[in-house]
Image (cartoon, rainbow, N blue to C red; front, side, top):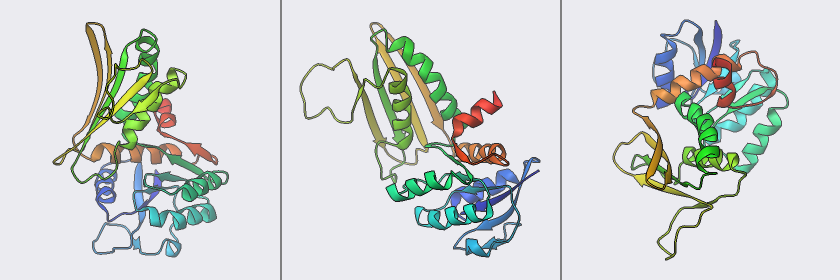
Length: 254
């Protein structure tokens, strides 16, 4: 059984992961890290990561960017792989992630959903067919009203997957209100919707003459991201140093 440390265990995602792991016979949480320690999770919780002396095979992180620096130091010192789910990292932190991956396995992905990451793979094949046939390409993403960044990191990852398959010849366009002209061939429009409590909806549209093909992913709860993070944790345990992503997890399960 894989022994896991939950970094950010008392946050929303940490609690969702805790509930799912409790039902999974292949992995267990042996310790948690969180600055807030106000509940009984069924495992020891440390407010300072350096106080954690529990042996583990992997750390799954859903915390805050400010906590990532110490996480990387701890991971390197203990030689424990990390599934890094925290977003909003600075350029310096991203550089530190790359540096740390020379000594310990790190898995980082724009989206932890198994569905999204399978879609990224499928889009490469679709893009080669529809893009080369002259179909227009659009990405539309929808999220809850509290989400601050736009477009979402997942929308950009979807666009990047398509663009990479087409030789990175396409320009991204986020706003057409300032121009009055026909749509250029080599562009991918990326639109954002913010409202209500939408967890996450992403559509990739290939629009041709008299035909439209749409790839859709809809997340109805954050458990889809938690499930992906757990599967990533199982995959990463015991892996050698290096950078990994969810595509590696998908490939291993194929």
